[in-house]
Amino acid sequence: NWVSNSAVTAPDSIQLKIQLAQEVLFTFNMNPTGSPGYYMIEFNSSILSAGLAGVFYKLVITGEKNPFTLQGDEITTLYVSGKGTVLSLRDYNNVSEEISLLSQTFGESINLTVKYYNISNSPLIDATMTYEWLGLDPIQFYEDPINIGYFTTTIDTSIAAVWGVRSILIRATLENYTAQSFLTSISITERPTILNGSDVVIF
Image (cartoon, rainbow, N blue to C red; front, side):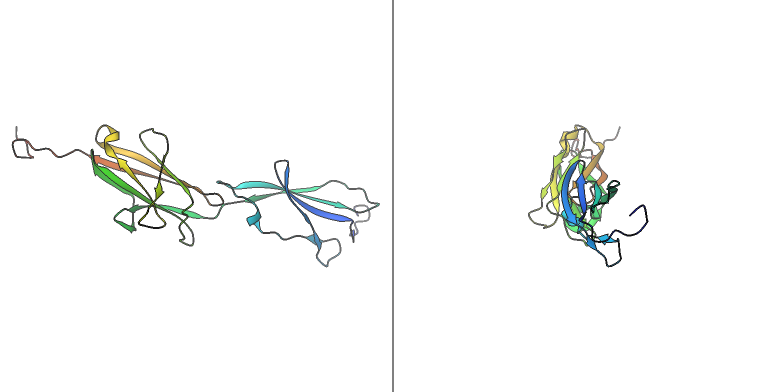
């Protein structure tokens, strides 16, 4: 009661609405706490989506009791963030070894292997995993059939046209988990050649 500053007990209704934009996703009846005029509701954030980069929700609290006139809803914001994750580049032949750079001879293929996992070190195998290089559209990884919990793909270095260092951007996304990106590079070396039985040319 804003006139007398006394608590309103036994309201006709007091509700919490959770909205995304203008859409009402959930409506809860709030419960008395035992202290006059105080009400609460507990819900698990798992009923909401954190999307791929966190989501803001609007919390609207409404109350009614005759003969009082409602002075307006109480509105606040709830931000639901994704669970923490880690993305790392691995040695294809020894996936337990974390690496940061790649190297291959021009014209040869190289396997690219990554692990995307949560802070409990559990792999997130349902993630969307892509890489980008040479200005091409994102290219999909696939689940490694041998090393469970890892993603892998094969890069044909001849696509680079010439030898040199090329950047590779790896992205991982999964709903309700933090998206990750990893920038690495591959050093594409010249193919060895032989002239008159020797790989050394003397002028």
